[in-house]
Image 1 (tube, helix red, strand yellow):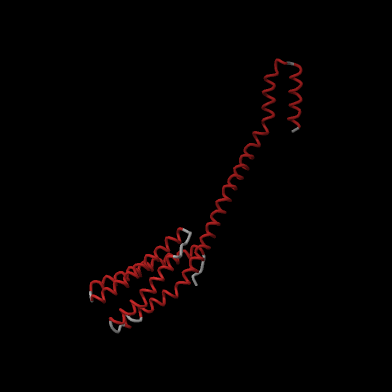
Image 2 (cartoon, rainbow, N blue to C red):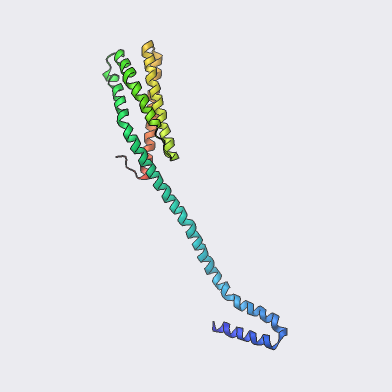
Length: 205
């Protein structure tokens, strides 16, 4: 700083004594004055760059955290709604299982159980299932799988009614294939639920 002040004083003296040297001396003076700014520029640039990077990074991190929290909240709300419907679906499937497989007695029992209990109850179950409308796209797409599986299963139940009325083996086979397809989709839905549970940290227990 002392050298710079001495130089500026000397430059002023030269300017007063000889105007012929004023232009060249002004150039020197300009260079002398600008030197510190050249030294400071890299530092200022780095600071500005760091500030900009910090400003750019913070919103991204904040947005990512916010999105994660929103997904966790949406998934929690979705599972709470599914849990409310689960007992009814379990009851309906239990009715079907009570007259099929190892519990089979005769076609009439299957027919009456399907017609009077399983189909009406499952129709209402699907209505309640479709009433769930997640706002999060990832969860919404997953829920659509559940709805698809439920509709396939419902159609399979109605096919069984027709098959029993007509005693048509091919229709029974078609109905059973539909039930298999519904189980496959439900299995994929469950895998998706488990993936979201791990992704969000929301426990399924």
